[in-house]
Length: 97
Image (tube, rainbow, N blue to C red; front, side, top):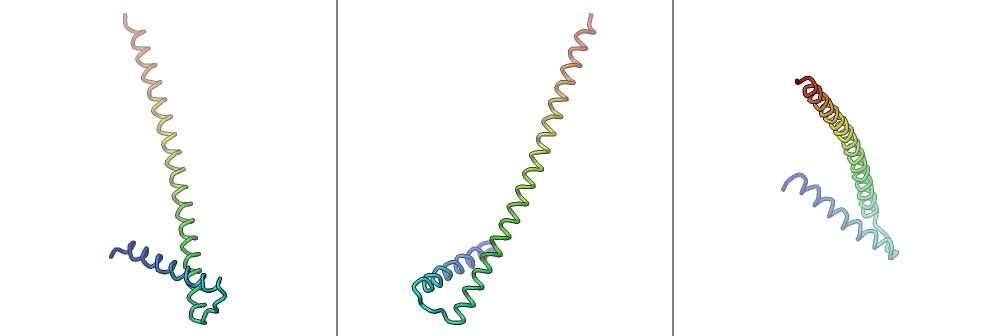
């Protein structure tokens, strides 16, 4: 099993456990100390994963913005080169007898 698959399986198991524990709390069933500790650990893990996902998304968004800036600069350079070419061709045509 790959590391990614293992993490996904652990996340799925944690979320299933969360659903069960939260359903018990909602029905008014008291949790044992071990279940309370497990609930806290699961919530903290979900919060940490959410924070990591947001940091990753922010980094990816910044990378996309940088690439968009590079693309705009490259397009501007291409446009300028095409204009230079057109001016050079026009000057060459004008210079011919």
